[in-house]
Image (tube, rainbow, N blue to C red; front, side):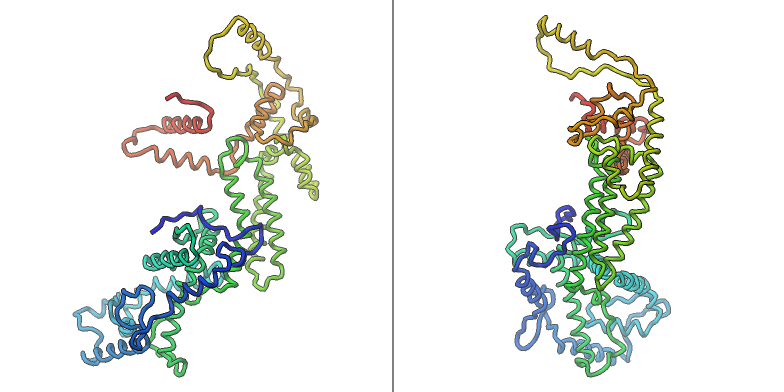
Length: 520
């Protein structure tokens, strides 16, 4: 079985927010031919001597699987039951304590059904199945995404179904003549991991044809069973019949898959935003806190546009989802006002400053007023701090033989890097910086480097800026470091104290970021 490759899924979309049809996919015009051949390879049973046999895994069962064979098996059950005195078994078991019924090789399963009805005490063992049925029913009520959830978990619960899924993918790859013959597992969603529902849908959409074939096989088998038991609808279903498989009601239609494609288009920007903000902001970006407000603005606009796009959809799933998502994101956007760090970091980015904020908040002058007050109050805290003005460190150079002229030039250079007089606290570096403008500021890509080069000109403001740009947008990186610390404390190292572990992880983090270099 091939390993799960979550980051290697095929994106079902070319453009932002555009639904995808089969003509846009990598399957091109061959998809209809493939679907026909795949369905026939599973559902078109071979016939020999007038009897019908399995097409898929033909060697796993040597007898026919047609209606005559099922009637023979049911008749065999009836004859055996009558032959042993209308009893279902001869084993010496305590009927009052019977709780589990195991059906192994008893034909169509009618024996297990009759046994369960004969001994109600065994029904308690089916409580887990009832709970599963109820859970699947609740998910199904959520629409296509709920049906896909049921299918994915149904596949994952059975090793045989997983194996069939991989075999169906191999058939697909061969039919389409793909160079990449990799096969994939489904991805199950849960309520704790970020973007896992999106990953489940993306993988499900990628495997939609094999998944459809698996479910269709169940639907076909059930339809044939119903036709046999009811005489093709000429009589009611007998009471002692199989229970309808719940997965039959989760069969996905082409319209359901189109809705999944729309979900993916809506969720793709959220995935992009999450991946960006949970990164490692080594150069003041890709996970820096100044990116939070702009990312939220982008997502809010995306959800508004998506809601309008699906305003007149017959089914309300997408419209309601976009509206609820917008409300939740707007709630957290409002909470950013509790800390001035988000806004101050954006304002102190030389490529954005206040004009970028004013353009985004043009319809909310009260936000601007409160925001400017909050940033000013934060600056006043830094304005009163003492400043340590060190000389600019010399760049390390390779050792080489110097001349008297080199020594003279080096002494002159040191004069220019001697400590300057400490800037008085009365100087408003923040207002001074805001009043200046450099055409090259809009091209600044690394705000940390920008402020490091201006530490002598704005000693206190640069300290504030560097502090802000050192704050990660999310706790992902600290959590990664925390997990590494846990891996470091193995049983042979259980005597390590917290200060040693912390120091080791700190040094390792500095080395990875390039802050220090440890000689080998």
